[in-house]
Length: 111
Image (cartoon, rainbow, N blue to C red; front, side):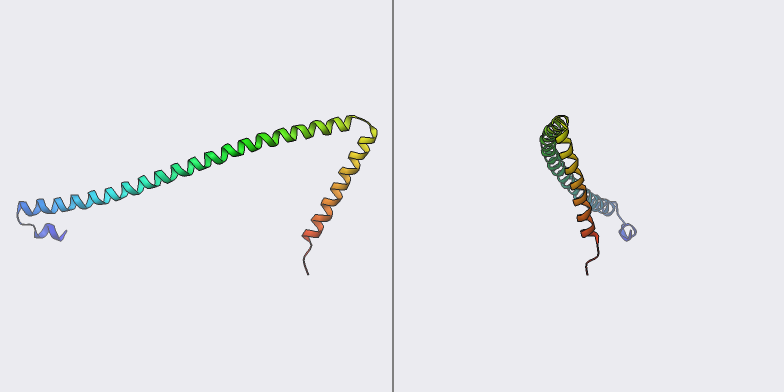
């Protein structure tokens, strides 16, 4: 602003305006450069996340196949006879008891 007060000739005003334009253009150029680098970083992140999601899709497909096979085998075993049902019930009760014992041991305060 002090430059405007000292400007006495049209050439001086033009020089001040030119300097101001260059300063603003430099500022704008640095902001554009910063935005470009941010956009490139976002693009890289999106590509990495897409790769991760593609890998997860493949993993989930294989897990789905494994679970489907396990459910089929379990259903076949449960339908095959009374002795197998007793064995399955015993295993289920045993697993539940083991779960509660482990949860108790892990949750009690350590002394």
